[in-house]
Length: 268
Image 1: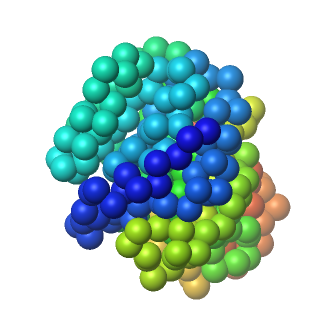
Image 2: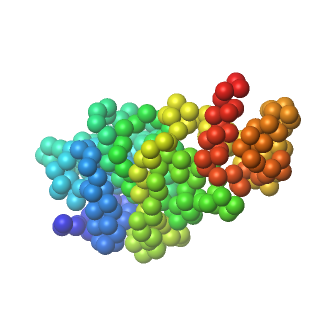
Image 3: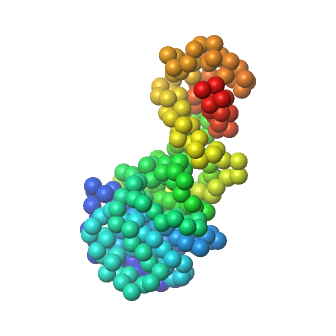
């Protein structure tokens, strides 16, 4: 795998796009290897920037679609991969851009820091076909995705991600792996779909319930739901799951959250 690490130096990173270009060769190889291990026949890359991951991914020969918001990066990518028949560029915002239909993608991305959770949320909630996702996040965000019940990192994103996917940390990176160097560490996470995940049509509603329930973390669920549900219904919902009346949202495991949501859905 030939890597052109000098390529990022030709594109000026823009703070407004949350850009930090990956330049560490070992990290690039690890990410590319994780992406290409997927049996999916198509690749989707989010935020390719100057194409540091794109070039080695294209060597595999699978068709690749790249979604890029920065007009300067779009111009660089058009020039760099001109004539590569299996490269397809989608200028636009990955949070909203129309994506090609067809068989499942393997999805990759050194995600822009200011949009990473919105992009992940889209792939978890919308009916987009993917076989695996390999995403770079700020370490703080990665910890929230991997958060366990009873910890400060545990929250709506942890619960939805862990209900939908098996999430594995592939590697941790320091600031020196990027240009410009961010002020924080980063981590690459691998997402693989889980059997028994919530139905797609239920996920937006589940996420809304989670945000309501975690709105005031130190309050009990009963207090967070006050004014939304009658006290007796709250008591019955919690009791049916074997949960004490004074439990907080952060103490409820992901599968129990799914059961609470399903019970609420049956009553409305």
